[in-house]
Amino acid sequence: MKLTDEQLQEIKAHIHKLALEHGFQDARVCDTSTEGYYPKLEQWIAEKRHGDMTFFERNQNLRQNPQELHPGTARIISLRYDYLPENAKFSTPLKDPNLANVSRYALGRDYHKLMRKKLDKICQSLSEYFSLKDVIDFRVFVDSAPVMESCFAEKSGIGWKGKHTLIINPDAGSWFFLGEIFINLPLPVDQPIENQCGSCTACISICPTGAIIAPNKVDATKCISYLTIENKGGIPEDLREKIGNRIYGCDDCQLACPWNRYAQTSTDKDFLPRNQLDEISLFDLWRWSESEFNENLAGTPIRRIGYQSWLRNLAVAIGNAEYSDEMIIALELKMSEANEMVQEHIQWAIQQLNAKRLEQMSLAKKTQRLIHCVTSMLPRDA
Image (cartoon, rainbow, N blue to C red; front, side):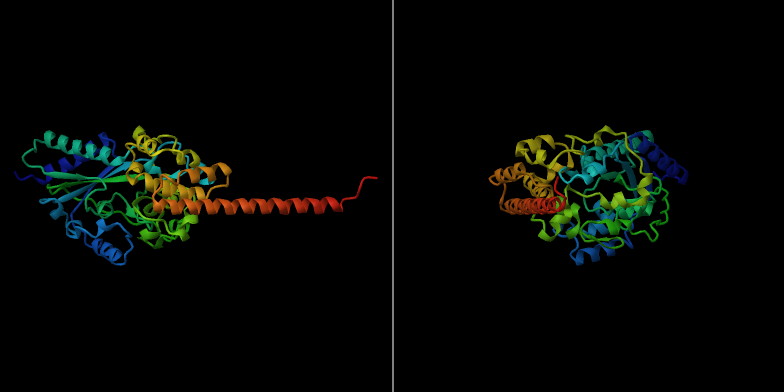
């Protein structure tokens, strides 16, 4: 069955309508070409900027050619799903080194399954509405499989790729997830929008570890999100202090981006913080057992890193927190639960805290001497 241009335009309009009904904020269409994008990814991999994320090295033909990933694909629909909750407490954990700082997207429910279900429903509704069951063929993706999602989001006009490599929408900033529908219908394509970053380098300047090594180029091996999530080994010692209290991901580049003043908040309760993760102390999280970790974080993105990586991240953050005798004891008690890699991070944290204790003692002595010196110079009472 050959569809007319008018029918394809109607189908595209209905996809957008269905997307909005299922909670998405936008749905736009582009062709399947990765020209101009894939060579940059290939170079990035060749330079070993991807760290231990070896999945980037596999299935390159599928990443470069969407038709090989899903045969028959004629168009790719990119969809935007905002996730920023109302009353986001950005400054609360950033200002207090004793609180845990968790990336905004990970505070609530894992978005992967939620969005995939919504995308499937959109496609099923579409096929039923237009009686296209024998014509339509599709496959949905949400940050899964070798898909160059930022390439298609930019080509379709969802936004442009910022210097931090995230997609920025002029009306919504960058606090959103992306999803894709690979479809066999030759829908009318949308046009990309102009990159509006200009001369701004706020995201590059604020990166705690200097991971944005050039505009649109991130060295994952320095990125806090990589170090605390994808990285399964130790965190380089020279980067630990720079990580601060960030125990899962990092939002600094987004917080610095002036376009996020236009960010749209989400009313989706699935993305509301769970377990008070937006204002919880490092000490409280450190006391969780492995079973509590698995139970409390079930259904969230955080759980997939596993308990040992969780302890590793917390140990680094605790080493950057304020000294307390209670925390030293708590660190030592976890040594038996930790593997060899995590034990090294715990020892580092203990050394950091003890160094702070000595600094506090030294400062207290200097203060006492200063007070004694000043009081000795005061005239005595007659």
